Image (cartoon, rainbow, N blue to C red; front, side, top):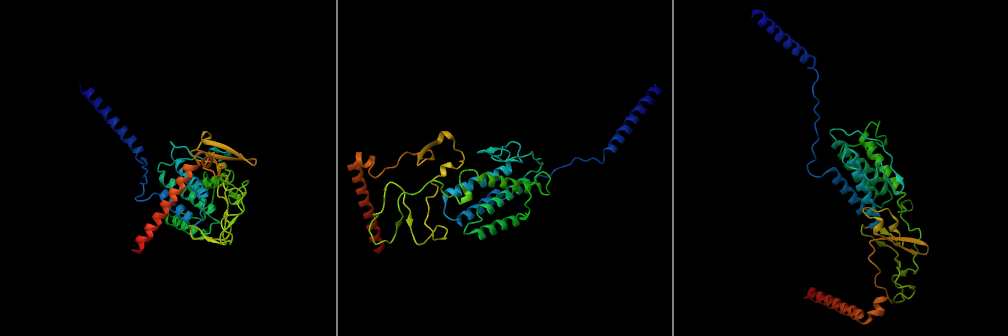
Length: 326
């Protein structure tokens, strides 16, 4: 019995010593704990950049089609910058082919704490696109300064222009630059004719300009009352307070050619005029024409309706004048 107890004691002692030795061998290996950056209080980085973009639009010329495209591309660039660091999301352009343009890509390592990389990539992508799209804006100086200020507030270097998001010094910044470059190149192929200041390539007005201030009453030189006519002014002030001296062109006459967002081929109707295909999405149908269906078939009722509306508008105007003077 004594020998058995002694042997058991020795085995227990040996196991204890072995366990202590193994623990000592691993004592210098500690689990790495990654501290996750919390979401910002207040506005997100994407929201901050959206405010800069909207300010840029306010300080540019009034051209809704062009700025709708700017909002689409810049928002998509932000989304791509975010989605690359999220393994459940798919970018729109990065690593994809859109309208025959390919934005080539290689896999990006997603850090455990992804938010700082997402914010950096979003910022550089948006900054580069704003700088490019509004370079010739009448408010270019103000717009660029506002973008520079936000980059500085975020602690980001505006001079860092590397596109090497794999081996570069700042991979997230380079990724943002690369995404912006893809959208800039794509924008030169999307049918907008950005490289020629979005000018129409085929559409020409058939009516001569109507000159305000001419001695002749009415519009005697018009050729087709159902077609668009340019208004000729010596100069005018647009909605952003910019002095414009040229004659405004038909804005977006061929905009159906531009690669859309969230619209499919099933939404599109094609109309050909003078050998050019005009693409129309969600076609609402033909408007009332002078000498067209409404005048020939519903002539009496339609004209009386117009006459009644005119009288009503005049009565409302007189009522307002009377009450303002009273």
